Length: 121
Image 1 (cartoon, rainbow, N blue to C red):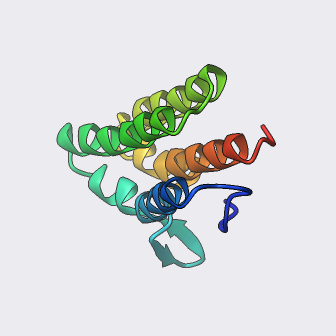
Image 2 (tube, rainbow, N blue to C red; image 1 turned 45 degrees about the horizontal axis):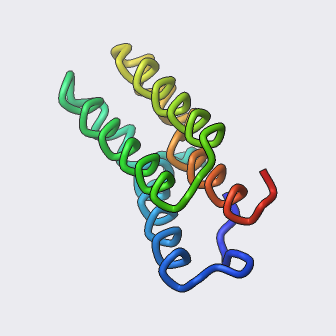
């Protein structure tokens, strides 16, 4: 996911996007082990039932914030699809936790939002 300044963004939009980037990194790539990046999404997801609910709520926050920032309906639909895929994959015991490490829905969604805001999507 590219990180940097948006083209012609007001300070509030830039600050909000920076906060979403930080959340996405925390959720999807905060830790590294044996060259594999993973985040709290994978760790919290190990808690049966509650873990996937909590991580889906955080992922949904990214989508809601994208809507507030003016993301288009097609971008929001792709983001919601990523959250749904992450939830379904994560709901499968053990296999889902490994899939969480690979899929990284939050990083995907912030990248989609950034491309949209830069006018490149």
